Length: 143
Image (cartoon, rainbow, N blue to C red; front, side, top):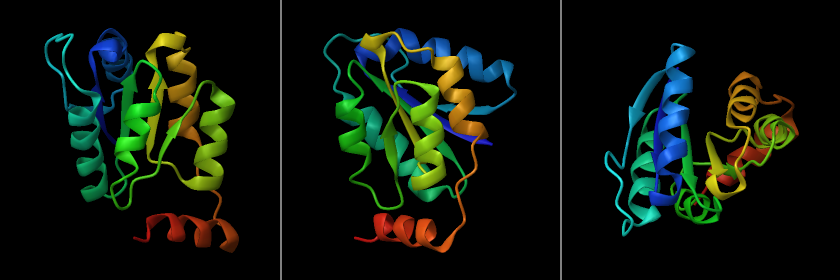
């Protein structure tokens, strides 16, 4: 499993904690930045980097973090084959994986999420394969 990871300045500290957590699970991490804290950075740059990588690497995942998770989700969802979802708890993570086959998890750093539980739920939940769910995901991936 490969996970592309990115944040802005408001999510920088949580991104580093998430990277350490994923390392304990022996998951391959590609850190798309930022590498250093910059209070003037823009979430867009890192959301684009993660979304481009997830879009072009089938079966990979992304985790994006900003203050509210709203900005990174909006930016990431502009890319084809990206289904970014904001999750505030494990139930959100399971639901979006089951029904929408989300491939980028967006976390809100300002809400101090229980990120380990949310990430575990997101990564361990397999999407439903009934025709109606496959049809809906296909529509999400259309232009």
